[in-house]
Amino acid sequence: MSGHSKWSTIKHKKGAADAKRGKLFSKLSRAIIIAAKEGGGEPTANLALQNAIIKAKSYSMPKDNIERAIARGAGTDADAANYESIVYEGYGPGGVAVIVESLTDNKNRTASDVRHAFDKFGGNLGTTGSVAFQFERKGQIIVNGPADEDELMLAAADAGADDVVSGDGSFQVLCPIDVFGAVRDAIEAAGFAIDSAELTMVAKVTVDVTDEAVAKRLMKLMDVLEDNDDVQEVFANFDIPEEILEVIAG
Image 1 (cartoon, rainbow, N blue to C red):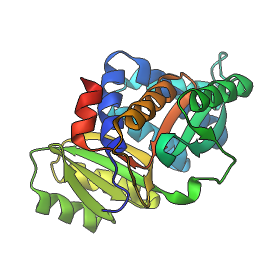
Image 2: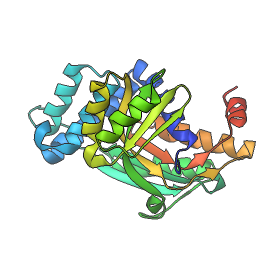
Image 3: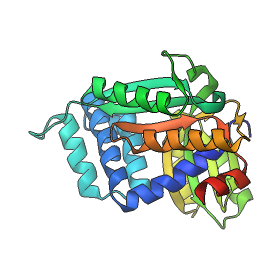
């Protein structure tokens, strides 16, 4: 489908590795804290909090961690954090559109770090709206294979999903954000193993990156941004051939 880039697959694998060493849990906690802070600590009345909890659970974040994050955000914890949500937009090497979503308690530090990363690897940080029009917010659910694609498509479509994309031994289910929870529940009820469930930005068009040197700089930029503690999500619209990705990884 249009907009399905290699980055979504790479991000998913990186997320699983981050969860193993606990780094991802810190970022998931921040998302829950800010959602509870802005909309209250009751998930049934706070869609953003619902979605943050769904994502945290899909990465096997412990229940106690989730409850502590809700308490901090709702202000029932004396150590409640004062995080601010900031989105950065720009272009990476090769003209690739990049969106960086952050939650930070020091916006000057985060802005400096993000700008430095773009500058260092041949990108350009832009203004609000400079690349957002190239993406669309969607719910994304990753289902482990092997699975019956027809049955998965039927369960997902009945709940309101837009598309099911197969690749790398798994399936990516995309849906409008207002039916995200319903689609996830329907897939789970149908007996499929969900590997992750989260809101994402899907690119409307992708940029082919076939120059190895450009691809290396681009992947380094993605890594540096993703590894920043203040950065929650990085979205990009590149598509790099598998043979180049293997060289870079090697």
